[in-house]
Image 1 (tube, helix red, strand yellow):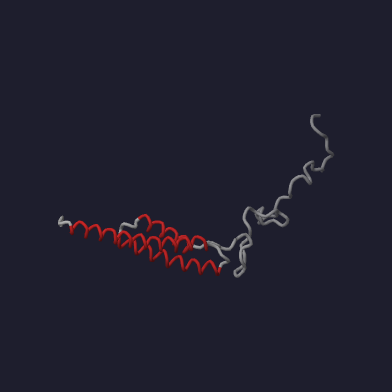
Image 2: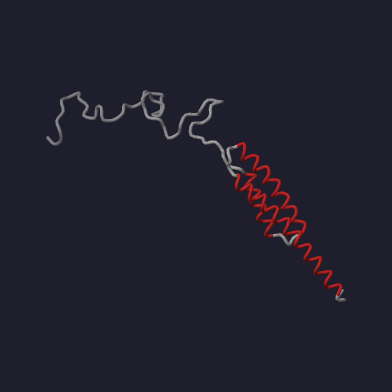
Length: 143
C-alpha cells in the first residue's frame, strides 16, 4: 500500500487545521477565530484607538501662502494690499491657534505675518516709485 497507514476512524488531519465554523456563522464570527482585517466598530463616545489627534494649523499655512503670493505680486497695487491684509490676519489667528495647540505651526504663522508686512511695504515702495517716476517725467515736459 502506498502512503501512511492509519487505523479506521482516525483522521490524519485532526488538530492541524482550525475546526470549521458551526452552521450559520461566518469564519470571522466563529468563536476563537482570529480577528478579520478590520477592527470592530467603536461604540459612540469613545475615540478610535488608532486615530491620532489633528495637529495641523491651516491658518498658518494659509498665511504663509498668501504672504508668498503677495510678495510675488507686489506690483499689483490693490491685490497686493488685500493679500498682505489676509496674510497678517491669518497669521495672527494661526499664532493664537498654535498657542492653544502646543505650538504647532507657530513658525509658519510668524513667517506669514512677516511676509504680509513685507508685502505691504513693497506695495508702498512700488506706489511711491511709480508716482515719483510719473512726476519726474511730467516735470520734464513729456506729459
